[in-house]
Amino acid sequence: MIIMNNFRSTITTIITLIIVVSCNDLNKESNRLTTFNGYYAAVKSGSDEKWNFTADTVKLWFDDKKGTPILQIKGEESAGKWKEWDEEMNSISSYDSIWFDKNENSIKGYFYERNDFYDLIGKAPTKTLRTYWLNQNNKINEILMYWIPEENTTTGEHLKPILEWALVNDSTEIQQLYPDSRIAPSRENARRWKKLLQKYNETKNTY
Image 1 (cartoon, rainbow, N blue to C red):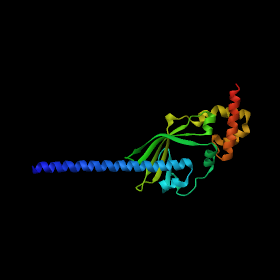
Image 2: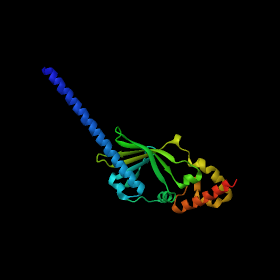
Image 3: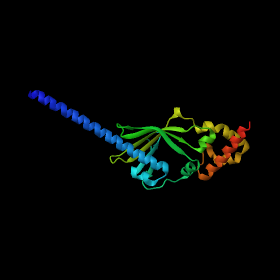
Image 4: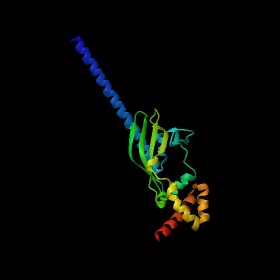
């Protein structure tokens, strides 16, 4: 009888531990998802409240976690020519699913980005796999954006016929907007690209 009681006690303890661990895992997942949803909503709205969900410094990588990451410092406003470009091109980001990876202590999801530039050159929204790592304080402190080759077409593919047309019809403009086969980002150049691409599409649609 004593052996049986000890066995039952052991089983009860094991079951209790399993329940506690499971509850802790669910709470952790829920907390992580809540943090991400708050952060992402603030980012989309352009609100500074995004800093409520991040560490003091956030490391940002593209494609893999090698080399020196881009640092986003808490409280600093994002600036630069690409920010101007994205604003002028009305860049919109969305996702179709997110999930918690407990092995990596991260939030993962497939994200899509579209903008006026993609629309004008006939490019579908880009698809990326993003990973958001959180620290022990449930704050986002690392982000990885992986561009999925098999799910995307390159900008160069869509620009090829446009560049050929532009070199014949507006060579000075395209040489300024696309020096060394690269986009020179700025708010003004985004506006100039729009005018050029609209002109190209109008010309193309007349044939």
